[in-house]
Length: 114
Image (cartoon, rainbow, N blue to C red):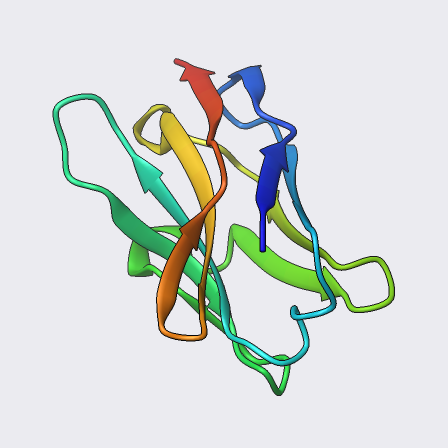
């Protein structure tokens, strides 16, 4: 299984971005899918997850601003990010634990200018 994240970029504070994660196999509906981020000098943190049942869970600091979703037919996972803040800056990774192995996308850079 391979994951490929895209959609990052430079945006002003208050703006929006939508990240996409393309998954190489039909697994998004069968596994919890996650987005993580890593800011410079900080540890990687989980930002959002979507359960097999389609329920989203969020880091407190992004609750109400970010929305995770998926398209089972396209094997895609998305992260809609609104009202972006400077502290949302970082490299964003999609993740799945598939058959007991952590799989990561290559990361996409999000930079929010204040």
